[in-house]
Image (cartoon, rainbow over all chains, first blue to last red; front, side):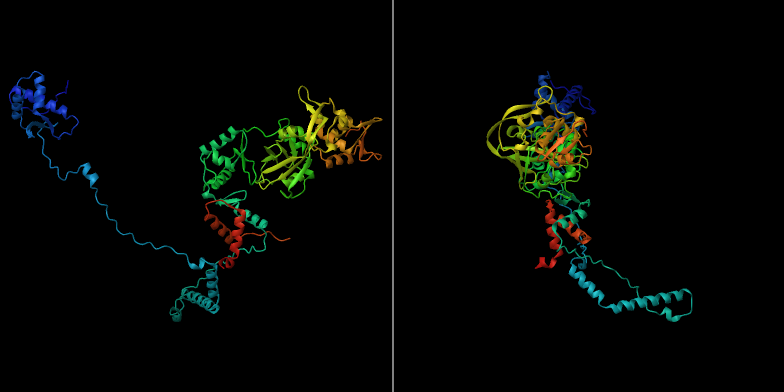
Length: 574
Length: 46
């Protein structure tokens, strides 16, 4: 049922019946055209309207409608369209005004026939500022300067004229009657412009290292230049990372639980394909931008640029803290050479001690320093390296801790390699590759041997025990801790931390454990002592010899009867 | 003992121009080579 409130503001004419029908008709047609504009013609066929009214109980509807329309001619009209009578009105209640359709400013017309573009006045040609060609090339500058220098007489004359002019001007100021001065030719004062002649530095006889230092000295502090390691780029060319990017990089590192190289971060986090045009630029951006963020730490080398963040699990042993190990190796600082030649040797051979074996580490001594790379960044604490063992087809992630002013350096993370392949006393060889972050570790593979070797039993309280062991690696016999040589260590507990801090105390304890007891004294040969002291703490031959020879208390002395044998007198422990 | 070499403003300006002309990071060795070429312009021209 169609209903519409009849709020007519029009006056209907005719009989009461016509007015009533006209009002209903207008309401009906307004309802029909309720979404049309106020002046738009609303058309409805007379036949349809009549049918509607007859449905509401009006008899003879068409005739009565025609009468009502005729009585209200200002409101309705009847048009003949295709032989059909159509009632026309508008929502305003007036007869539709015929609007000329031609030239209407409607949307369709505007869309199809846009106005022509306004003509712009021609832009005047702007004159390009050109640099004086004297600045463009050095040769032109020199030629110009030669031309300037040639007429030296002219310059002198100009100076003379200028001087004369000053004198004469002063005379005029004093109002002296000098008519000649007023007639003097006015010559503009000569100006001398000095063009600085800067020639490039002649670097012919300077070696690359010195030039690199000079470049670093001038460019590294320049804020316009971005530098990381041996790479350079203008700062504004380096892509920037949003806080979200940095967060994703940090979270990915934490998720992987190990330091990752910049190429891995570029591919896995930033989605840049290796080999694409922007890959190297993205790697550089990672290195340069992360080096400025406090939450990231660079732990790489020139060829393997590893990055770490807070919250990553430590690499290597958890038996001792890195700081404690650094203190253990403090003596290495005295044995280091000044100005080390990093990566100057191809390989280093090393005999594994018991201390190194149980902690999975290597000392960063002067030999190792000549093999491994220098810190790439200032204040770099450590570097993550990859140690490949071709004999077991395994690559280990190890951490090199660089020495600090009061702690020695060491390499951590070889626990598994040692326990799976080696025994204390084994000989290993570490050789470098073209990649300064990647090294090969090998041992002498030999047929299986059996022996009762020293171990640290950690099942209950820590104790040294000898257990039958089978090993298939080349060993240095003097460093092999067999029960025959070191039986005194069996069942011994590790020394107290306070005792083991002092090399003299460890040497004294070792004499008592493994030395031969002779009339209250203990004697032992140097090699046995060296293997024995390295059970408790790291000690080089140099340090042990120095401890034995430079003992002021007289506790240690060389045995004149034996070959490289020392004696310890208890009770005078240093 | 010889004093260490110092680059003058002309050298630095040239290096900066060299860096501006590249969109990829360059190595220190590339900068050294560029500096050597710059100090011998006549040889470069020939």
